[in-house]
Length: 60
Image 1: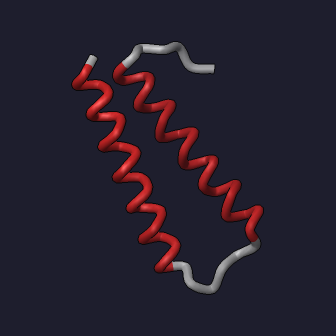
Image 2: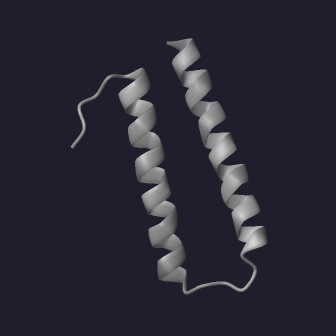
């Protein structure tokens, strides 16, 4: 259980750094709602994949 929590923390840290890098790259900011939608989509796919792999949850 410790291993899964550690990997989840690592994933969260990695994703936050990725989003930071992306924010730096896309300096001409798109509208905020598009940005939020994009981030939510990535989060959804990302964490759904993680949950499928580690916790074997069924997909929606």
